Amino acid sequence: MGSVRIATTAALMALAASAIAFAAPPGVSITVNVDGNDSVFNPLGTSTAATGVYNYLGGDTDLNWLTTWDFNASNSQETSLVFVSGNFTFQNLSALTQVYDVLIELSTTPDASPTKMGGSVAGGVTADFDGGELGSLDNDVPIWSAYVDGSQQAGLLMGGLAVAGSFDSASLGQEDFGGYPIPSLDGPPLGSTMSVRLRFFLTAGDQASFTSVFVMQVIPTPAGIALFGFAAIAGRRRRA
Figure: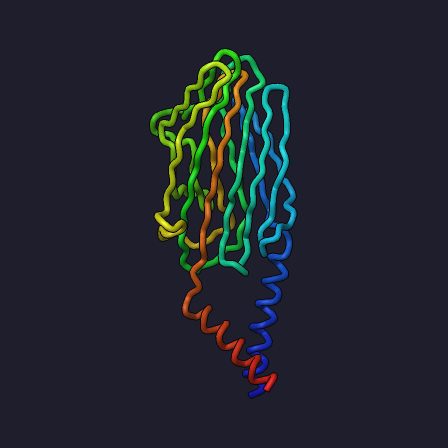
């Protein structure tokens, strides 16, 4: 009986330590590359009303561009969901068309359990007085991509293009993957990072905006389910 209690206590302590580890906002890195020049940001998340979900709100400006972000992220085993979901905007302050390569990377805890994944993106351009364009870098290059440990899982808005008239807006449309309800597509095990990448060109003086989500759901293995069940039963026996 003593060995069973020790094993149960150890399992519960491990679970508690895991919960403590996820109590802090997950690490996020945003790399904004404009015309080959990198700017790297590490925003800090603030807690939201949802358990394990943190909000990242901010932005930065350069002589030639302005970017803002407002998104939620979670790396919470309490909910089994790991995701990045929110809004990103980019304004070209220069007099020339710019090429953007943006990586939003969320630190994750490796987990060998199977996963389900999915995501979606919608985007568009808002033009100044002489109209504007937002589009993919090539017909076979997606504007939006999702990655796990640097391995691409999906690419959306392939060859996308939005053209707006003077002081007008135009949409790239919306695309998704992962079926309904999202997430429903079999995914890889969690690694150390999951990322969203945006690659596009934007004409001078204009603004691009994107609403994006990439989510993975960890599916507990039978061994993990058994551990939780055993811990719960042992706890009830001790209280009895």
